[in-house]
Image 1: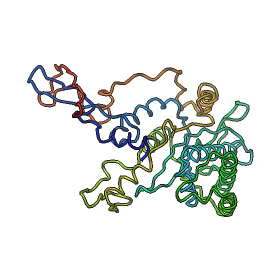
Image 2: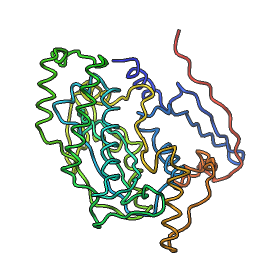
Image 3: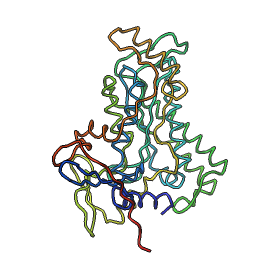
Image 4: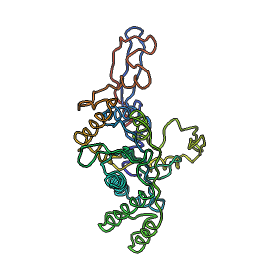
Length: 366
C-alpha cells in the first residue's frame, strides 16, 4: 500500500472511536452522560461525507442558474484503465481537461449553441462492485451566455444539447493527444502490467487501437429547476466507492454488499479491502471542478450577468442574490436540519441544560 492508502485505512478504523478523542455531554437535569467521539474527516471515509456534502451544497445554492441542466458522462475505455491505475494524477488531469474542453468547444460553436455554458465535473473511479472504472459526471447548463454577454442563449431544440457521438470523437482525440504529449515528456510511469508500454512501438499501437474505437459518451435527459440540480449534485459530489448501507454481511470468509437493482456480490475480505483502496485519490487531488460560467474566475462576472439576464427575461425567476460569504452553520444545527436529531438536548429528558467536557484521545500502549 502507498502511504496515502495506509493513512486512509488508519483514519477509517479510528473514526468516531476513543482513539481520536472527543467530548462527553453531561445533563444537569438528570445526570445522563453522552460521549461523542471525533470523526476522522478523511474524504474517503463513508461516515464523514454527509455534513461535508451538505455544507458544499449550501455554499453553492446561489450559483445554480434557474434553467434545465444536462447530465453528461465521459468514460475512460477499458484498454487505458491499467495505465490510468499506474498514473492516476496525470490521467485524471487529462480526463478533466479533455471532457471540459470538449463541452466548452461545442458550446462555443455556433452550429450547436454559440455561447459559454456552465459545467460542474465530478470524478468517480468505481463501478458498483468496486472495480476500477474512471469516469466524469458533468452537470451542464441547458444554454449559455452569448459571447458578447448581452443575452442568454437557449438550446435550439428542447431536450437536446450536443450530439453525443460527436462529443465522443472530440473527447477521444483530445485525450489521446494529451496522452501522447505526456508520453513524450516522460511523465508516465510503467510498472507491473503496464511495463511493456514503455516501448515506443507498443505504446503507439495502444494509441492506434484507441483512436480506431468509438468512445461512448452518455447523456441523460435534462432535469428541471435548481432544486432538482441540487438534489442530483448531492448524490454525486461527495460519494465514495461504497457506503455503509450497501454492506449486507461480513465475516472471516467474505464481504457481501449490494451492487445494482437489489443484486449482491461477495468477495474475500482482503479483496474487498484491495478494491476499496484502489479508489483512494492522490494527495491534494481536486475531484470536483467547475468550468465555463461556473469557473471560479467567472462567478462574479459572467455567471452574475447570466443570472440577471434570466431574471430580466422572466420576471417569475427570482433575482440573483447579492454576493456574500456563506453563513457558518454549526455541525449540531446542520445535523438537526438533515436528520431531526438535536444534539443540544439530553437524549433521556430532552433538557437543554448540559455541560461539555473534553475526552482525551486514547493513548496507544507503549
